[in-house]
Image (cartoon, rainbow, N blue to C red; front, top):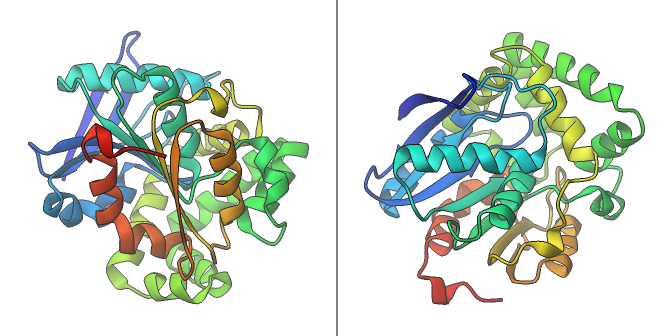
Length: 293
């Protein structure tokens, strides 16, 4: 694990951590909400085994990345381009997990010459997809509330911040209580629980503004159209996911011009990325002619 920070034009700092094989195929990992670059630690050995140089990046105001007032989802691609140039990486893939989905898609949209393929894992869809999510799912309830009452984003971030900093074990136990059995299995794993707790605490290292902004951006109209993403995208969703339902994947599948969708009958939100990270990394770094609809 190698922590670093890049100073961008204007002095703002962007934090990232590298996992896996230093000379492997480069893949940028975009964490969920709320989360941080440390979320990807669970995949360190998996990335090594698959020959992947996994580079996990903190979004502005989360982890060790400086807050950026007025940021947009579209602007994220500029940060990623600066990071890739700094690292001397010409071609790279991107993986967006859960709330990281729009950030992977916007990079595929804006940087098609640099990104041959992208993967979305249990990813949140644009606001139009929220109607497909049952209100009993975490994203269905939370995104609906924040769409109609944007102040909920700040309140939610403050509450989660308190739990993440002072009662992370209780927070994960609460997640376990409402989780389907595949996720319960993963959330019982001591190493995964520790990684999740560390990532959640790190998300609020500099306060709650970054997470609140992240949630508001997920709920507002994205400033690009999913149908304009022509880079091949691999979609992975668990059919029993109670955080981000598979219906959001089907919405994206209909909207994306070039995608390959995989729906796992007995996988949830945490179990899917935990159990299939190796396959996901291998597929997203496969030779270009294997990325087909």
